Image: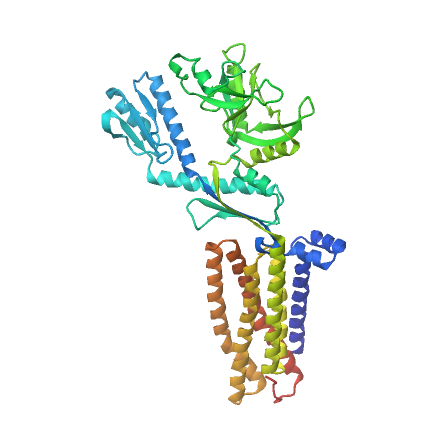
Length: 551
């Protein structure tokens, strides 16, 4: 019996040592040890337990995702497909367009379609399963409407892709434990919380930039036109060639890049942002910052084939335009087949080049973001929250420990030891998991202290009841733990289920509360049942048979 108790005490002491180490060393022991060696134990504690936005300070953003832009892009693709197919078969039509691109981007209207081409239209729509069959409208027009399921899927996927792109960008800033998730209080909104971040302007620019990079075929001279009106005057009737568009950009032939120009480029890009494999910064011939990017294997082959088919030897107006966020950034003539990397030069600072490379590596946003809310939380507010929260936890714990000693006498020491170990295990869990401690998380710690006392009260009152019924101390302890066990499990499991629901459906601070509460309850099951029982057994093993128990 004594040997069994000694083994259990050894296990408890080992667990205490391990979790105490985790408080200061965290899950990266080498990093924590280096911080302690250089700045002391408190530095290791700060390195191990990550503080949330409300404790550390930082920035808080809520963005609205303009999901209709993604829907509009899908509709544009369908419009171009229909135009190209009708052009191939010399089908007569007046116009194919979106009547309301802003409010109803999922609708396409086809005007003046030859009656003989209706069957062809139905076949083309059948090949695009996201659209309902065409319906006949007024004035011999046909209307295509995107299916509601496809519309919802595009919008949901757009938000998910935006979150992934933003997370990839934020990771390059080195922000620890950022919160980037869909905001549950609005439709198609994203919540971003960055503890410890302070460069709000740069973060905002990094988040909001769509970074939509495309390589398109460019037409006419590289000088461009001074305005859209001047460009339109160059074409009969002011109508642009089919599948082309005018885009603004800087003067690609000017060193300063200050003068604006308008360029005629293909509406459909040769390669797009999703075709980029990697991007990096470099230096051009004048030792100025530039950005180099490489393409995926399929895109590289496609680009090589295009440049081989469109060069000065075999094509007219053989130019390429590098378009970033619908602005022409670079343009160059095609001398020969281009295979391998592509370079963007001019007008960069070191930071802007690094930021553009980061954006290209993270992927382009499928839709633009509109800021709804932006807040900066100062570190002084976080310091006050930490100080008051820790004071509340210490005062509450001391009062509870004194009460347990007063009310349960010597057995109260048992409860207090279990309570201290419970707190050590909880903080060690936070250090091991890398969870973020928020102000509601501190409230979860305090609530855990109360739950721990509640478990001990249930057990001690059961033991007292058994002693009043005339049972010996050992039998009373055995029955007290056995009968209180079901109640303790019931209360803890129901509370943990509630905490899991809070974690799944809550935002950052609520999740912090749920995490600390769950860890604390799991630790409490161990301390209230196992540790407390071992202490009782150790005390009883040293008492003579029939001796009274101080409780």
